[in-house]
Length: 219
Image (cartoon, rainbow, N blue to C red):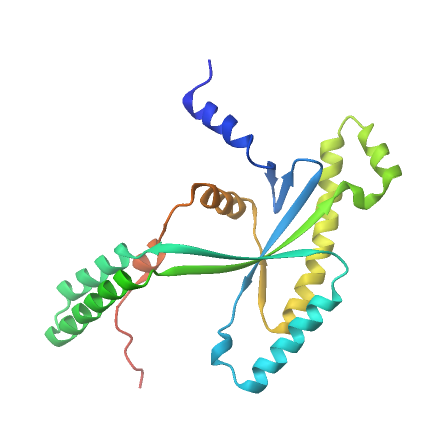
């Protein structure tokens, strides 16, 4: 008899195209696969007009240089900063400097009021590159279909093709002045889990890594 977890997993798979995630490859139904590249953005509004024009020109050149389709994804995720606020409160409580403690509490109250009006969003940018078995042609596709290990053959072919396309994207994105990073298996699993579960992300690392809530000027 199937457990409740197994039933949920089975019912979920009916509504997704994902068959497996191996290394940095997402294997989809219908003999297709994708790899996802996260793009570390830059603050465009802080650049000079000349720098903005240069980036726009480089971005246009990047799009025109592509010989294969890509999908650009912008994902907004609401953040839960309750742990961050709690850490500020503890820093204020433990501070031996009364004035500093007051400033920390003022800042904490300011942030608390701010998030009541505006949600704190985590914005991420991705480039999705796809591969289909049809790219190899009808003859090659028929040959693969006859093999007993066709799933493994398809994975290796998809991996080679996607890595080649990713290198082309890396090269062109570098000229735009942006930093690309291919998502690995664990990151892909987490990404799709969050997408399908639509959960708020907690800022745990920020709270854990805070050494002092106030940055002091170095002399």
